[in-house]
View 1 (cartoon, rainbow, N blue to C red):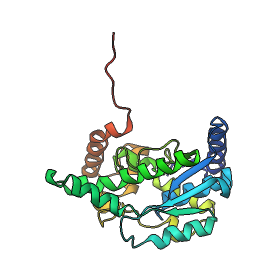
View 2 (cartoon, rainbow, N blue to C red; view 1 turned 45 degrees about the vertical axis):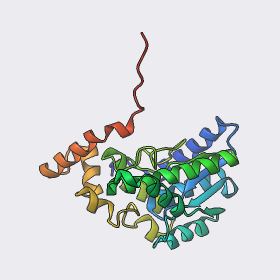
View 3 (spheres, helix red, strand yellow; view 1 turned 60 degrees about the horizontal axis):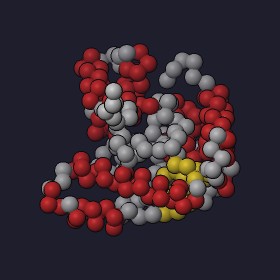
Length: 244
């Protein structure tokens, strides 16, 4: 975490930033946010409540069949007191797999379908309510491409997109959110593995690499660099041919 990081100031700045965003969006009545039960959606949801008020924030829980940790999502919406909706994407997910089964989909292709279905769900609800879709991805995940293109990386605004994992937790602690949610082991909820198990390095190492240019281990530095470069396409708009 950056030495000069001030959780109180950053929290207040983000809340003001959210309010300013909606001030410039007169047609936006509120915000829709996907609630996973992890630290990112936990912290972001509370920031929305503090900026807009509970009645202008809708939490959407989107299990794919049975979600073992859905109690964490329910605990959050109860703790911050926001209205919520549960949309199980299992039928849509299985229907899509069945419809394109002849393509012999890889495991990664299947894993990435769920976040894209969740994005579609959030935008459908947001359009119906005249709300905006709030993103919940952090800087550390984005840096190494641990995000699904046109899935969780699709949103109208993102309050924590420039915060590392450690900074998100610092904001969550400052906001007084349940410790077990803010410091929950991060996982994609899709593969059955933690983020760090899938990546092959820790978010602390990613954060050190971002802030210092090295995590102190040359071999891990190279892994992080390659992940970052390979996934840069996820952080930029698709190119368009320019007519001269």
